[in-house]
Image (tube, rainbow, N blue to C red; front, top):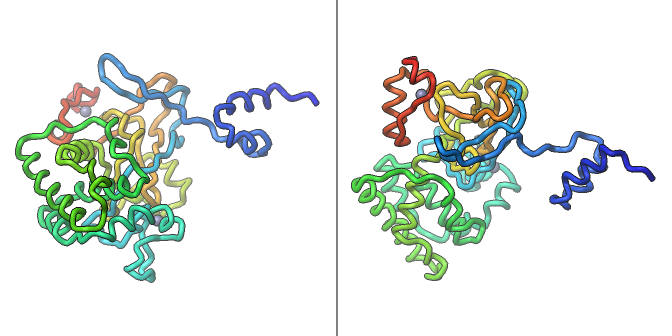
Length: 315
Ligand SMILES: [Zn+2]
Ligand SMILES: [Zn+2]
């Protein structure tokens, strides 16, 4: 039987993914394409994300699951402990998952977390208004349970820390470490949890964590096609760290945007027509602030002077 050149092409392009071969070859629907991006190291701006083909306005560029996520300690709504979707008020509070699926995929690290007494650690973070140590706590439980690696965030850029920041982090570390040493978890399972590791992880979370704000409500198509999804002020449900979205550089007039529809799965979408080879950038802060406020926030929060064309033109 003659095989059409088109089918051959599709077969060949998916040879590296043998598990998907049948889906793609015999499905009548369009096969999923790899995201139209590539991460490259440049001389001028370091690591950056570029479009590998033209991307039209409103297109979903790719999605990303968090490497680690945690509900916001100040969330106004109860949210799923795993995916951060809002929980219906009818669900019993003792079961913090939206579904059997979320319970199953979180079971290992949730069981580890439930073995320790978090009173001192949680109280400390709440009293100090800290949210990022909760992400480290989650990551530690994920590493102990074997669902994540202790070096899983090493690829991300760390923040520059002042001695005061390190001193504050050391308190959090001591409380976190104490919570585990009082449990039956074997010492060798938490051997990775050193002060240096804790500070290194927190330094990365500090400049790479996203505040997850759900844009849910409207239809999925509406949310993807609107220029900016409208986000309610009280929509923040948690914080999360992603790998690929963290490689996007900042621009005060970005051509890409990250949105969350109803859970922590991030969706990167094009805000305008993007050319092949163009760098994709997102805005790390509220783009509606004036130039001086933006530059100050970017320098304080992320450690760089913004030289985007908006800032250079005094806009
Ligand atoms: Zn969930
Ligand atoms: Zn700028």
